[in-house]
Amino acid sequence: MRLSLFSLLLCCSFSQAAEPLQHITVEQAGILMQQQKLSSVELTQYYLTQIARVDDAGPQLNAIVDINPDALQQAAVLDEERKAGKIRSALHGMPVVLKANIATADKLPTTAGALALKDFTTTRDAALVTQLRSAGAVILAKANLSEWANFRGEGSASGWSALGGQTKNPYLLTHSPCGSSSGSGVAVAADLTLLAVGTETDGSIVCPASMNAVVGIKPTRGSVAGAGIIPIADSQDIAGPMARTVADAAALLEVLQTSEAQQKTGPLQASAWLPKKVVLVRAFDKDYPAVKLMLDKAEAALLVAGVQVQTVQSWQLPAELYQDELQVLVYEFGRDLARWLTDYQAPEQVNTVQKLVDFNHANGKAALAFYGQDYLQQAATLDLTKEHLNYQKALKNSRVLAEQQLDLYLKQAKADLILIPSYGPSWPIDHVKGDSFSFGTSTAAAVAGYPNLSLPGGFAADLPLGLSLIGLPWSEQKMISTASFLEQKLQARKAPEFLQQAR
Image 1 (cartoon, rainbow, N blue to C red):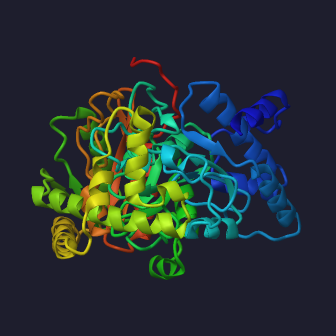
Image 2: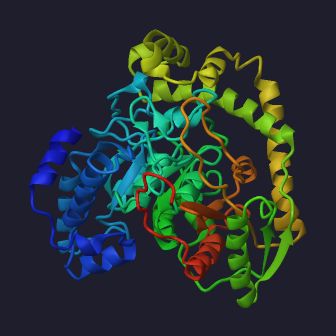
């Protein structure tokens, strides 16, 4: 599919508006469309050309795995609607890339990057895709991901899948893009799309956002419908927006939210609101000077604006939390993946978790490559009835521990938000040792179901750093307003240069 389309793109003349479209925002694109200076077809064509030049023929980022052959046709229909005065939403005619674990009822495969689901297409849209189509978004392509959302087994390398290969960090191509939503984050960072949707269980939105200098929002648990997303665990899985600006991420999140969530959060937009008090976590300053510099700048900007900043020097979650979380994820993986395979009519030869395990064994390195399938095997053999009480205990305990950590500041210290470095700098891609995280701070919000927004905060040499804002459930509007303020003050994002080696 991609080669014939790429050949067509490369041989044809491109829109004269192509140059000004680099790193365009939703608001800018909307104004140009309103002024009839830009069409959805031209914007879609621009990104198809970018994919051909950058993702395929250029640095070969491996961010995009499948292009929607109907994307330009969708864009043309939406252009006609606009001419007729019908504008569905702020995303009318705007291209969006979806992570490859999100079901679409079209010609785009839904695979989670696994060889077992190669070329598998469903007849049903995920609930969030139905909402995107209703809002007038153009489904541009599917993005690569860590296979099975990075829950096949231990020793994986973020951004690798059997079908998509290794996604690369556009800032330093030898380094990890992080998180299972790596393709979505890289596609946005490298200007291969205007917007992207990622999914997170623990860190898979905020980590690639942090390491690719984009904005990622993991929303409040339950605020985005999960139906149709190939799951790890229903208690933590959630989709969220990835974009180059806070305003763009907010516009996408507003469309992704359920109607109930929209009522609880209200309109999501950058406003003049600023918190009265924040807690700033400086637990990593000593070991990471670039992180300290990022936090110094953020703290100074907030203080000048009259925000009270309480600094804390430690951030330590109990080991029991991580143990309970893993127990919950394995249990729900076996339960929820089995349900998805049935509901979305996976091929008979791989329509149970055990059949997936057997398929991988039968196909050797082509399916399993450089690491195993520990989690799939555990999920396949787990007795859900026998383990139900242990699962319920672990689920309850993990949530209590996570909420205690966050509520210590959000409730007891009466802070509006917690500000904390999202993750440390990226590390070299290694298909022998797997990922080499320095530190990450996503777990408490992931387990508790609290919202977490990561925005570009600075750089450690060539590598981006992200700053996370964590709030109580349904505080997305507060987070977006504060993040928009910090985005303006820090001016931390810059376009990637696709470096082959560190400078």
